[in-house]
Image (cartoon, rainbow over all chains, first blue to last red):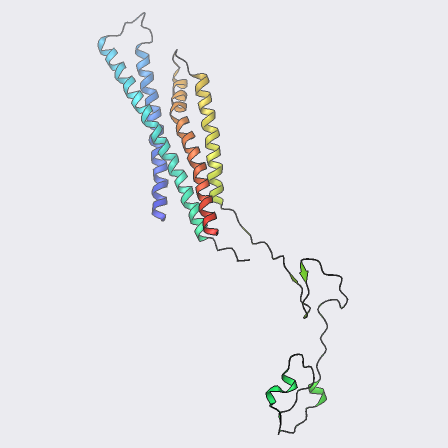
Length: 99
Length: 148
């Protein structure tokens, strides 16, 4: 049972790191897309810039959507570790003396 | 002649000197046969026993109240409940913060990251908080089932 707990702990760490990375990257891409349209009145963006901004927003949205299940997986792995340890503690506990 | 198995020395409550076996003819000395008086364990005039205790004939007090077995709570189960409640509170706080600060006018770089974090993490944390509380209930139910 120990290797499963180790796998769950590793999953919690890896998925949590992946979720954080996705969120940071999503925020960065969204900021980059917004920067193109920052002063539209002065500098009208070219077609290529608009295309790049559009791709940045799409990637940002996709990463934002992906980050939620990654975070759920990470937190669920932590909950799973606690559940396994609780059940193991319950099994290994000596039985109460009969009255 | 009577059967020696029914001799008085073998009867319950016999407190006299041991009777030599028939045919040996060796009387026992009074010193060796004398019983040493044993001091009673309890006060010879004890007070009235309480309702939940009674004193048997040998003076040993037996109480009906046995010590309660130490039922230690499952620390991991408590951690599950506390973690679930903390996740629910944190997730609700993040969601409330996101709902009050979200704007259509755009954000600065720092605000953007914070909003993205709240947007992605608040449903995840709330979901896992509910799952942790449900898991705590399941672990408790399993423990109660194993006890019964």
